[in-house]
Length: 184
Image (cartoon, rainbow, N blue to C red; front, side, top):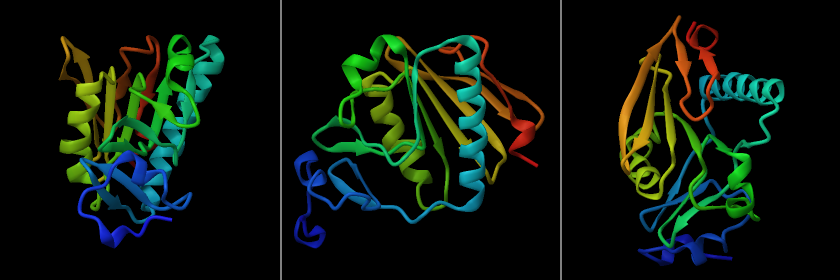
């Protein structure tokens, strides 16, 4: 088992030696420990997951929806555990192995005081670089959601939504998430 204190730079090989379930992500060659999420984080995640799964069942979409903890390996210095992952049916075979290898089609992150910097800056840059088509960031404090879409290898803000509004996915046409249920 890897002793975290002995190294300054970590790689994907080091990361896979951690004990299963260890509360770490590998972000730019650093092992970043995350405490368990706040209640609001879990409530948002549950509502979004339920809505997305219902949409997938109703439409016959055979994509894969995965909840954490699930590793998404991008490169030797970046293995993340997003709050929610969606992979289209066409890309499951190439990305879904023992862990996710490469960019999912959609990633959801829910901000917490301990992770906001990573989710808004470092992880967002890697998601963009490796081609995550849609990146959704829920902010429980500001009570809003930002949906970034990839166009010409760069993210642009497709939509900013708040309580009482619908969030509209681009990669899942017809999937509209009502924010009324989470921002009360």
